[in-house]
Length: 322
Ligand SMILES: c1ccc2c(c1)[nH]c1[nH]cn[n+]12
Image (tube, helix red, strand yellow):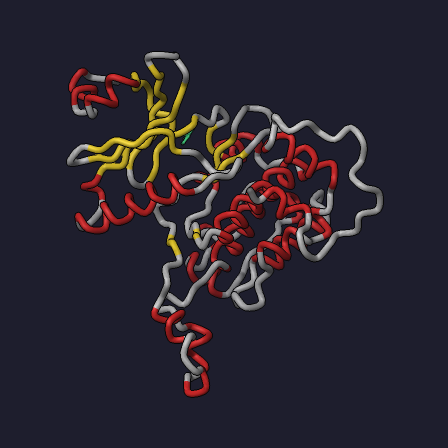
């Protein structure tokens, strides 16, 4: 319900350019509303982040600033684009491209579980999006089905990763400066868990494993309904592929899940290794993904140069990594 006061609390210049209507999504830090640009009637999503939701003023601004900085800096077909940005003293307003298909979370819930080929098409796009973030020194840190948006109601559609407010930009750290000096006197733990938080890019690989499990199985791998606390299940890497749900899933797909849901981050499969996994060497799926990501690029009528083996250097995925 859009009481008049709702509209009045919006920034004037936002009001002048857009009409905000119904809520289409909810996030931990606020809500997402459907908006129409007055001049063109084009549809957008406006994400509203209430500053007061954060325990301390500093965190709110810092998180949102990081999110906004990242949103404005990234450019990849599978990452949501920011089109406009406004703020009042109590909220941030981010105008984003509208994803008509809504959240992946709802799609999986409605369909029970996704068909394997659909899950593979979505997962491949997520890998490319995260590979792009990592190559730009950004860890997402909050990959989950609510943060994966679908461009249409069709199974074969473009997906986009959103919600970077938990992301971290890997700044020049004390550890990096330390490593410039002579390492000979440094204790081993400085290298293994030098950065205070002791995590790196591999946290996103784990989350992608959870996402793939949910898409293929239709239920989460770790959940308090399975008895122990979710945290215990996660730190022990204990999950079950219930036969009734996984019987029709290929061994290769299960292998990808098992190699991502590895507790030891140094043994966990990386994004690049996942892209090189046999399950994703599906040229038809990749062709579909590329035509969704780069719709204007003419698809080559003849096959690429014959017999081009996967070159170690610039292989196909790099080309997609704009
Ligand atoms: C449903 C829920 C959230 C959505 C959405 C559709 N489209 C879009 N763009 C950025 N966020 N977001």
